[in-house]
Image (cartoon, rainbow, N blue to C red; front, side, top):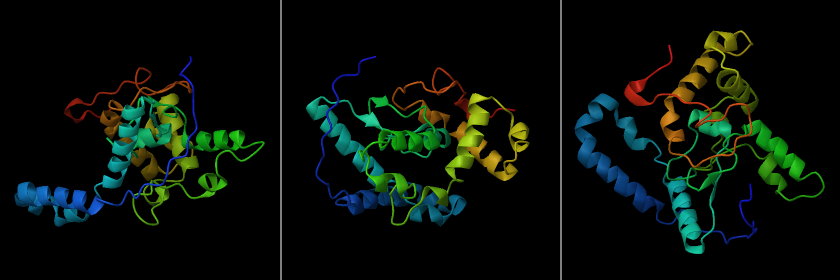
Amino acid sequence: MFLGLIIFQSLPLIPIKIGTPILRQMMYAYIYKYTFCQLESVGTGILRQPLSPLSMKRGTMLMAISNKLGHLLLSTGNKSELAVGYCTLYGDMNGGLAVLADVPKTSVYRIARFINRDREIIPERIITKPPSAELKPDQRDQDDLPPYEILDGILTAYIEDNKAPDEIMAMGFEPSIVNDIIARVDRNEYKRHQSPPGLKVTTKSFGYGRRYPIAQRYRFP
């Protein structure tokens, strides 16, 4: 399949934090005005939770560049992130093609090492630094997820090998982690329905390769 001419171009750094306080203030104002009566039931912690405006602003600017220049924006999410919903609608999920949508995170690192086998094409710091969505200072993926070696093992067993939770636990994975990851996979099907089309790499990809209901809070027995 020919996707067209690929041109590598470095863009100047954009001070993305400009305007973020205004956007956050607008969202908080909405919460105060329209949901204040519900705060007793959901807890006031909702007002202190991050709302991912940075990721949405990145996605908006990249889509604007794509539309203006007629270029295809590639979505950055990999299979591990899409599986557990570790991605932002209208943010890093923006794009016309999800190149890595069926590539687990651990495989992404192996591909990066292969690309750099003769010379540094991908900056080494991108490969060696701890994985992070960079939505706040010192954020790490492992603040909320198990190490990717563990995560990808569970995901492969559940998605590609179609193993039941007890079978995955029998492989040596911590039961609490297995249950948490499977719940995230099932819960985030609605996000994957809104992601760009991806390239199939593994034996079972999301989309046509794996259908899961999203209506009425369906859960697999």
